[in-house]
Amino acid sequence: MLWTLLLALLLLLLLQTQLSVCLRELRSGGSSSPAYSSSSSSSSSSYNASQQRLPGAIIIGVRKGGTRALLEMLNLHPDVEVAKAEVHYFNVEEHYRRGLGWYKAQMPFTFPGQLTVEKTPGYFAAPQVPARVWDMNPAARLLLIVRDPAERLVSDYTQVLHNRLTRHKPYQPLEQLLIHKGHIDPGYKALQRSLYYQHLARWLEVFPRDQIHVVDGDALIRDPFPELRKAERFLDLPPRISPNNFYYNTTKGFYCLLSAGHDKCLDESKGRPHAPLSSQAFKQLCHYFRKPNKLFFEMVGRSFSWC
Image (cartoon, rainbow, N blue to C red):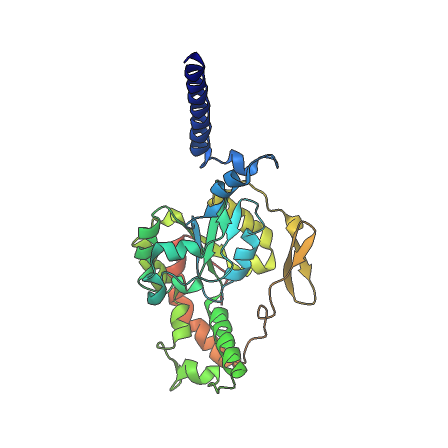
């Protein structure tokens, strides 16, 4: 009888110890310490710490403004993980109907304390997107990278032209699409995407100005580091990106990235020569953008050296 009682007490103590261990693991499952500990950490605790999370920051545009370059440069930061592909969740109805679970499944795995960043340049000009992003995360940080709107338009056309020619489909010359009866055609879609003030106004109806950081895309190409340091500060990231992460590739004509001894350059579509446009048509385009640009400068509280 005594032996039975002692055995029962021993089993009770073992169960109590096991329960305490389980409770400690449950409490620490959301903390960062198991994820960054040495190899003695269990694989289960690392799995619990690393998971797909909704983005805390989104590069919302502009199309052909340097969004891919900005994403790759931010990815140099050890506290940043990026979605590799454009998700088009908020601006494509078929994707949006799939819900936040689907959106989260497109994100990279991150540890607690790391920032998930997504970029889809189509978000900036889509009217329905600002409210949808707010519903997902009202605290989301938004990065808007802009460049000379006339140059952006020509680059936009050049990409579409390249895609059409690759599929052996004809496409009108830019001047025919851009100018109608001697005047700029305001209905041309690529031109509408360059009216930055119109699109930013919709975002500012939803998000406060201090949650939108404007990156100078032309400056990012000329000298990436100063723009990246500003982005780090905006995202509340410790300064980890340095000038040593960049080197100028004379063959490609732009900066490439260096990280952990490996270099990476953007793909061949970046820096592609622009489609031809007469100097007269380009001057007309620059004149057309003067007022829209001025309105944009007033909205963001800074000016840019555009045509």
